[in-house]
Length: 303
Ligand code: ADP
Image 1 (cartoon, helix red, strand yellow):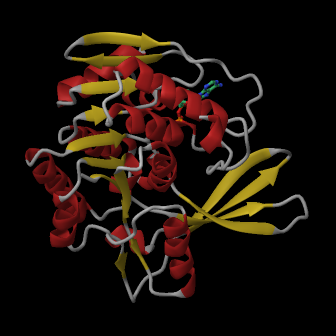
Image 2 (cartoon, rainbow, N blue to C red; image 1 turned 180 degrees about the horizontal axis):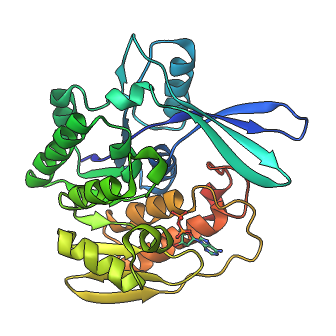
Image 3 (cartoon, rainbow, N blue to C red; image 1 turned 45 degrees about the vertical axis):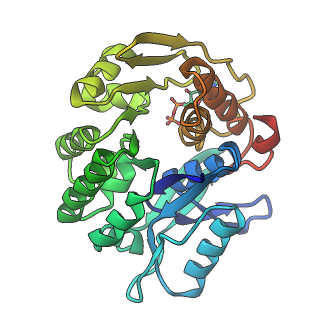
């Protein structure tokens, strides 16, 4: 029987500078990056679907075609005649990357406007995946309805996975972000936070503090990523620490966490033991940070 991994969030147009001084167009976004790697890493008996909202214009068509070409199921994607997709531009100043965003009125902000549609998509999911960015882009009322829909899917037996991906500039203030993140954690089974972000905004003193906070919120398993440092996993069965092979030639850390999540979930959700699944996530992330860009093609064979 086909099993279904459903990722939910916003994919954007990416404009990245080239060596010739022009820009190349691509598509990326945290949950989309995870879905893209998930499609490569999950065994073929798993379907990988993406739920978002896009426009009906040519660039929206190209985005959906890109996902389809990557093997991602796009049936859950909603089309809005009144909106289009968000965009970000990468700028290089003396080798330092900075990002400018045009996403405040993107179609993806409406992805939970039709909650009956969300319920329908999630009803067939074995694993539901979303992030702090997914909920950050939703209007407040839609966010509440979305988390309730996720809770209903979970009550019916889906495993719910959440990467907090803290981005304060998408929120009115840090306090609002922290409350919303913990509200989301309350409907999740697995949390995949990154320690550095969590320490910055929640004041955690150690990765174990981070794990404990998400455990208290109701997550049965918390996997705390920490750059090149060991990954700390805490569940009802105890604490597991998994060392990470340090990468010496770090080229671009974009999508380190997103790819880790895909490599980990592809193994763990398919029944691989926790420690080996974490190793699979770290191995994929290690390859991804050794090359430029969010979506690294050669990671497929290297992982
Ligand atoms: P995020 O990209 O979400 O901030 P992290 O920086 O914590 O996440 O990194 C996610 C994962 O990527 C880590 O758990 C690790 O497996 C891998 N990783 C990140 N930086 C390095 C590094 N310098 N060397 C090896 N692995 C790394």
